Image (cartoon, rainbow over all chains, first blue to last red; front, top):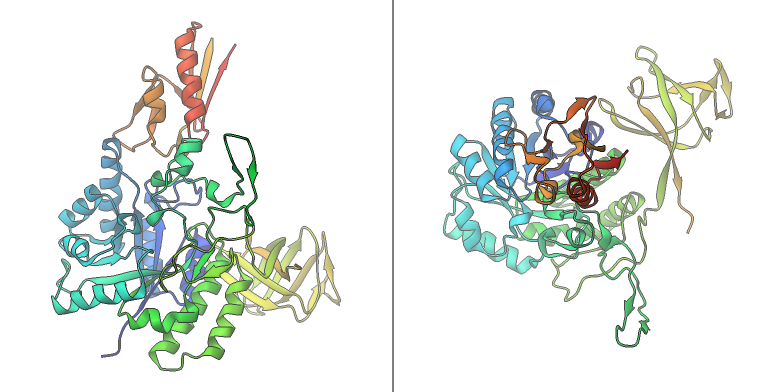
Length: 412
Length: 78
């Protein structure tokens, strides 16, 4: 039987959900209401959206998971139960949980449960414990490849099975932001801003610059890198063969706060990499291609996390992204003529000309990327369209109100 | 008069306001968000008017507003 590897994508919005599906994800995860690790995000889905989201995923052959992975207080129990009940009713495939209250409740109503990274599973006995409740568990990001492999072997040897009767599936993070705290269990944001990361309200103050001052004499220490708490992002595409050789079966991509273009690019690269691994065509040349594409979208620089056994984290040296491209907002889709395959756009700012790389995103469209070939302004061919123009061009299906961006290289 | 407003939709249910100003706040067992007791909801903004100038009410709710991680509590005195 051919080995199955699941690629799990973040869906922080409808646009990103579509982008994940288009990119080739096998499953998506997203938050509803406030009990998830991106509680601040205004773009979380609501309980009313669930049927539609579940159906959209199902019709595309994609599994859908809801994250309910914050710390839970007594006052959260009823909303937690409602989320789990609604998820089951709506046909959502599983919840991702960390609090034992949520894990136990999901099990009691017969909804598949996955163990969240917040549980920090670092050994096979913890995994065995959770196998009474869950079919999938993500391993702590701090484990090495060797440790992962050992855990997978014990699962097989001792036939550790989840409630479904199948062997426990091991999930690992493959790409995205890392956190200086072990499995994201951090108190920095709570300490400085009353804003608990463990309630999904992290303000990411670790991503800022800091100085070190000797309190006795007030001498400021010189440190080469002021971003002393901000790790680079995890990237495993360059050693995905080693990662998959451990026997893990689910690769999770971090990034519910990321825009749809990011989700599509990252999912496409990892989809191709997994497929290449499975059919034996994974090679250095392809890796170089994927790396170049991944560097184009948001990143703080890449490293392999702790998987390869580095002693210390690698810290980023900048405040934000090191992406080699950025997107500039241009305007919106005014109308689409499906028969002609032509989109009409309203330029609100900047200019566009043939040869420019553009991206259109929308809740149903997901992400469409292309190079501008010909464009028409006022129904005449034109060499550019500028602010205020109504212009049209041939393009794949897009929809009214979708957003139009130009992708440009970042000069450094 | 003290006026307290709460933009309830954005509440993440952290419980700080209840800890700091328990006379005015409760956690809802229904949806896990906090409730400003006696407040009137107008388009998502829940407003409570306290007619008397009570220093303790003012002080406690100012602390709650300061502590709120999502900055959805506003306190003013007229």
